[in-house]
Length: 90
Image (tube, one colour):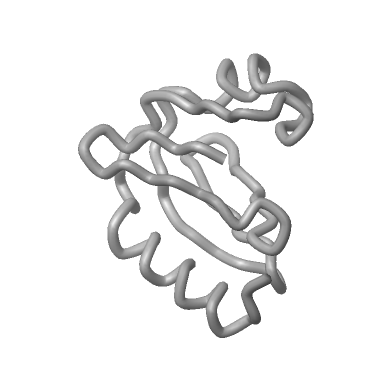
């Protein structure tokens, strides 16, 4: 489980690399980990632009142009970002 300084480092690095990218796809290997559902999340965020990365305690907040993604780094500990086409996988 990362401590606050590590979460801040993750936030800072993701902001430098992915701000301005468009989300092309999102996938997950456990349906229960995505709320309300992976299908609904896809409908709401595919095509949106990543504008900013913030954090509240150990929560990573990805601000999009019309929505946001909230990820608990302490629980999921696995976020994969591909810069070529800006896929976000929770």
